[in-house]
Amino acid sequence: VLRLGAEEFLLMGSGLLQKYHQRHFAEHSPLGGSVCIRNVTEEQLGFSVFGPKSRELLQRLVSQGEDVTHQGFGFLQARRMEVGHVPSLVTRISVTGELGYEISVPAAYHWRLFQSLEAAGSDLGLRLVGARALNSLRLEKAFGAWGREFSEDYTPSESGLDRFVSGGKSSDFVGKQAFAESSQSPPKRQLKALKLQPLSGSDVADADPSGWEPIWVGGRCAGFVTSGAYGHCVGESLALGYLETAILPEVEAGSAVEISVLGHRVRAEMLPGSIVDPQGKRMRDATVGTVPFQ
Image (cartoon, rainbow, N blue to C red):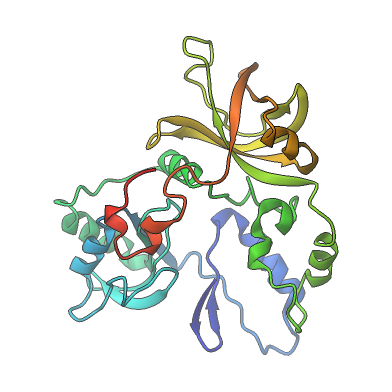
């Protein structure tokens, strides 16, 4: 959610969820027309640019005097500016865990922006990437995605999103009571990151989970995978999934964790969090381009 002005906000989300969002606003908007809600999905398009040289690329394309340094344009900030002579809304955010920016422009300027980015980044190693590459990178960061790790089926406490909910607010908000009630006891399940350890030469040595495979702890089904892919930066098979809270002490004590992959149970290890740059220095810090993989 971007705050563009004192009373102007822009919600950016999955295109598949437009009906969810529109239904929510229709149900909760005040009567009398004091709030205007407009779907601008067909009007705005854009690109996500990320990597250690993304700031250098952006600097080449903005107007002279536009400060996009770390000090002038910090993490999670958004600003209107011209990029390649195209009126743009730029947000410093990245789903990959790298330094990155999301650039939104009027649909009529989309192709022009692409040409500008391509020309300016030709000597920086600029490449197009697809959804599978993004999925691999987000799993290395243990970043959840809507429809997989996040949905109406999971509470904020289960998915780890409770840190973004301020239950102590004096003002009321949609879901406040439900959140307070769910916070009175530990969640029944928790979202965890996992690393698989397939045996070399086995039938599933080169296979990765993709989602909804069962997770076994001590021979008992105690959870399920929500996303999985190969992490190319770390050379590991990775997954995110929900595990029963009651079983976590057994896992921490060394009980065997396995994930079913193509009908075979593969040994897995529960990770404390991100397997790459766990402190998030790449996307947050001024020295982002010099932080090595961990």
